[in-house]
Length: 253
Ligand code: NAP
Image (tube, rainbow, N blue to C red; front, side, top):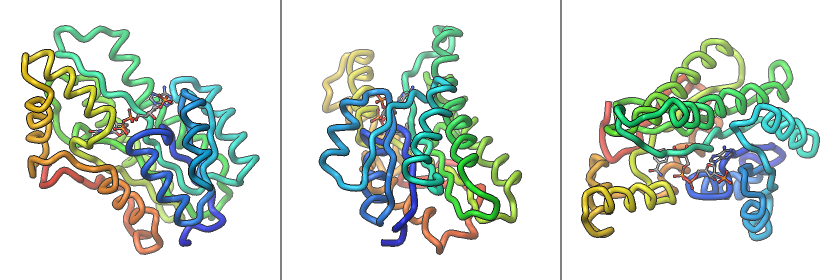
């Protein structure tokens, strides 16, 4: 029960990677606020797992993030573990990219992480312990074909982590990014459907195609991301700060 008595926030905590992290933090004793736009789904998940608390919060909306995190902190205390995980991964080739779509991806993935960290840090007192973790991607380290906005937003999240680790250097709060390759979640399912449609291949072939995007040619499972996050949240990782941890079956960058 390493995190007993701590309040954690996982944005996008009702599905996929975020939900797996939220479950692990709750199992380690934390009270975990899980946020997203789909309150019914969050409530259904929280009804099944003790220690999870649903919060409707749209990371693309400043008032929603500031108000939501303030209310969660009021209910459960300062947000000492904050996982900026909410994101979308819709791609488009550069020549077809529109400013509206670019802005949507940047607003959710990058502005959302900025607002989340700023509001969460605002709940901590001077000298408090904390762990701020961004779920970036291998697209935060190398270019991903046909996903220009996603690539830029995920690179931006790593820049945010680098900057924050410098701003708060010497304190008890660390800032790190986790960079998964292709993980078997709803985002992967979306990717598989679009590869299948674009290339005229079966879903099984499209799944194998996506898996080949990982260095070990296997789709990752959510627990592999959770394991890295839990280590970064541990006391043993207190000296790990400003890092980007690759989980992609091999070296990407
Ligand atoms: P997912 O199940 O689709 O999770 C995305 C989550 O983000 C959902 O819970 C969604 O909740 C939330 N979200 C999206 N837009 C939001 C908004 N405007 N405000 C608040 N919440 C929002 O897919 P996932 O694979 O677990 O993705 C989680 C993170 O991992 C993403 O940042 C993604 O880029 C990153 N990642 C995924 C992979 C992969 O291959 N799966 C690889 C590398 C990185 P609501 O719909 O309720 O809002």
